[in-house]
Length: 313
Image 1 (tube, one colour):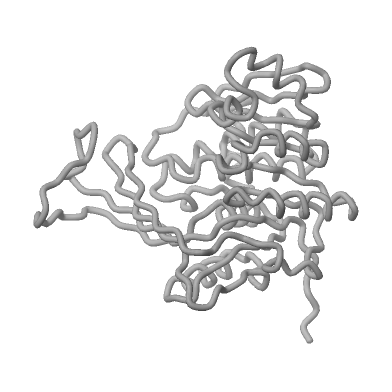
Image 2: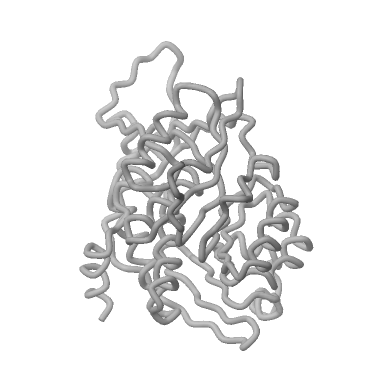
């Protein structure tokens, strides 16, 4: 039997097939609207894997870390596409679960000339459940949890499992987790880094007295992203926050920017740089991704990252 390689990071979350389409017919529109029976010419298309689980896994692998992903796929023609793409990137795929008779999550993303997009989503019955987790294979230094589609029972099990084994955890919860705010907050002492955007942060603690409530969160480190405004690095227990401006980038399409930020940030922590420098890793990775078409195309290697970081020093 082939001996399993020790992994630096295991990511948990979704695995999707994303079809990106752009057309001259999308240009100059504040919203998309077409009559039935009309044929629209597509000028560019891309079919690729997506989802928080696979995006962060590939991002970390390109930065040089041995990475595996835990996600559920359907039993359809899309599952082999996802597996093959992950294998080409060097991501461990033997923890992916296949749901017999179900379909893989699928998105069609219509992209306008300025990067605005409409996403059409078809979700299969592929939410991760405890019985899908290969617990005996979960050997790593770090876990990253992206959206678990509201499954906080699984989140608690993974966080407890990690704590018992000295595994650090970063968490980028989805909206279906964050609306269960009391349970999420109760789990934060088990988390090393909580990553949310500003709207998600407000969903967790409320808009009123936002920063006072953030400083009361029982998490060691928190990063709050604000798109074009950059992000905040927060140490709630010390009541400290630092703002970082984003890198200048020619925005083409923003899908996957949040996942790119997560992989850069985590990569910085794994590489042993300072928290502030790790934030710059995340911002650089996100800036590179938005300059490309698709969620994975612009993910940086370590060499590419160094070129971006020169702009900040």
